[in-house]
Structures are given as structure tokens and as C-alpha cells.
Amino acid sequence: EAAAEPDTAANDETVDAARRAAACLQQAFPDVTGPFVHVRRAAYEGEPAFLGVVVEGTEPAVVTIHVAAIGGCTGLAVASQTG
Image (cartoon, rainbow, N blue to C red):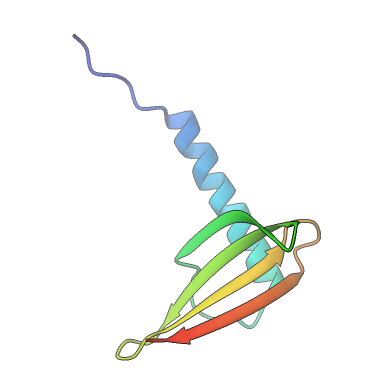
């Protein structure tokens, strides 16, 4: 039996969605210097939003979660944790 072909179209859509989310987060939070290591679509207080995670430093690292509204790419919230 032949191996299944990877769904490159679905992978391309996922990469495109991640790039759009990162661009929106960067627009909402222009002072962020580190890359968003994780982005995802979510809801924040009932509003469609993107969440972006930035990790800065090492021992101890600071993890910051940025939340941006999908409509307009405006900042909604920021939370940090040192660990």
C-alpha cells in the first residue's frame, strides 16, 4: 500500500495563518523585540483575538503573553511570568 501524500496545502495555510497572527501581534505591540515563539487564535473576553508568546532571557526566563484583537490588530492585554 502506498504511503499517503502530505497535505502541503493544509501546511501552507497553517504557516500563512501563523504569519498573519504574528504580523497582527507585532502591529499591536511594536516594542516587542523578541520573536513570537507560539501564536494561536483564541477569544479574549468574548472578542476574537491572537495570542502570542515571547520568551526572553534564560536563567530565569521571562515568558510574556500578548493578546491582540483580530479586528484592527490592537493590543488587548499583556501578562508576564518569570520562571
